[in-house]
Image (cartoon, rainbow, N blue to C red; front, side):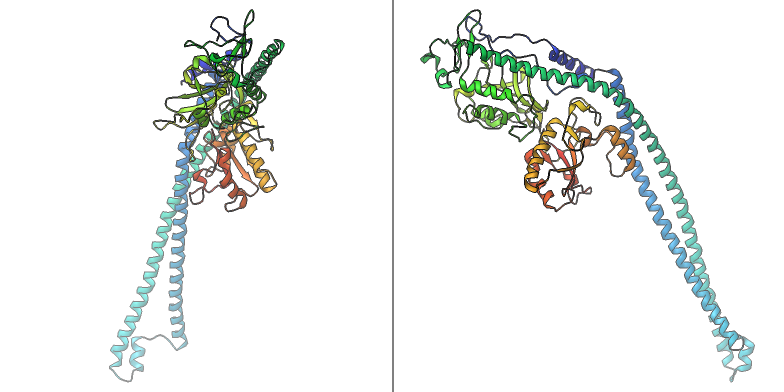
Length: 584
């Protein structure tokens, strides 16, 4: 979606959040509309708070940051090549110098031999010459032989010494050429380093401006989050008010079995609920009164909705089942489990066993299954009325009240009607990612952007993150809840919580780290730490082969965490300490 269009959509969502609470009754009776548990006015996409980024100035700053990041990425490859060439040139100079040294050593050795020969001549009474040979010879035939020998010795000496000198001169020439290559390589490396330094300075400058802009974004986001809290609170208050009306009318919610077959009769004083397609609905009734009738739900449904209401505001985390965090399936299962209704704890399992009803007949407590033709089933929540649902929402990172998107409703199911034979949930098609609780689930090997909420990498407002409770560390809220659950399990195994050295990394921190370790650090704006979806661990996890690392390999996946394949042993960048959240 283009930025301007996205801002319009999210601005409307923000206005919806801030709207006053309407009194919306259920319109489900054939004649009289009963009073129902009206919900507040929630956001269309809780957690997708990029609507607060409604600033052309911030868009321009983001664009400048993206341009700096792109330049840094291009320069990174050039710098790596220049450093490799510089290393090669340095090695060539060293090799050439070694050759010069060897040639000079050989020449010196030969000159020593010649000197020793001259010394021996002096010591033995003079050099051999044709005259001394003639005078000392006992036989005239010795003279030609000796003269030939002297010529051979002189020629060999000159040849050996000359070859050594030629070898030394060649080595000196190679060293001179290597020195030129080294100077060129050093000049290129220095020039690129200077350019990278300028880009890093530009990145630091734009980061300062972005930090100031994000402070305002953070303020707006905190307001939206408070509005979501208010929506949750008002919705729970409306639900309690509805139950209070039933109590005031002296009505106790009947068991589900008593409302299964309106045609066979309902408890005294109750009337059937009309169905959108004609006839009456199973699993609910009305208490006729003026000016509006009261909706009567089974006791099991009332308990389930009340239990789910108590979880509002708790963090979302895949693979968890309360009480501190939930995923969408476990919340539904636990809510109905509190009422004695046994249901699966995953969205696909719930889809398979829950008896469907006409979506137009949706009532509080019904299960709403959301999805798309491409991704298949992607979410489940508990309906509060025709327009709203309560869910552990992956995008919100929490249990929230959100609008019910009619165009994404795959099915509505009513647990109070009992289970149905297994009906498999639709899955992804055409290579689409599986969606769980409203968020796509990435494969074990994560590659590419992990953007969320409309925020740039490393430029996420603090209010959009949740603390780990450890030394100021923070992550995206669902990742933080999953980390806390994983740390609790780790503590049970080893007696100490997970040791963490790094989590969310701001753009400014990425710029600083890249300046310190350009060969190791990611280019600013590309690190998974900048999405609040990665941690660096210690306490034994930072080394392959330790019991702590082995525990993470065996158990992290249960909490949505993985060790990326690029960081595995033998893949070039071994980082046992680096773990990424891919649960949603």
